[in-house]
Amino acid sequence: MSIVKEKRLEEGFRQYRFFKLWDEITGQHIAKVTTYKRLDGKKLYISLASSVVRSELYMHRSEIIAELNRRTGENIIDEIILK
Figure 1: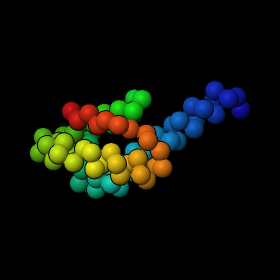
Figure 2: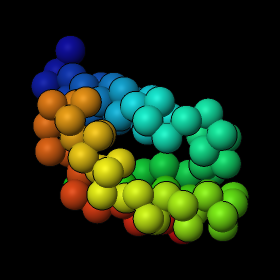
Figure 3: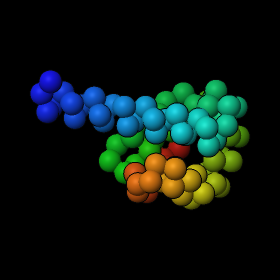
């Protein structure tokens, strides 16, 4: 397998694990109303079907970022953008 293919697979698997952590950290209810997740550089873009949940997450962004980074053992994100 080429290095490019390995890198893409590794990156895809890393994002999959990261999004599974998002679901674990935020809980089942928030996972259900999350309609879109994208990791771009150190920014995490999240779209939600509920404005109430979006407001709640907005207030807890720094704690969620800290927990995601702690569980991955890396400084993967430094900003969450909620839509």
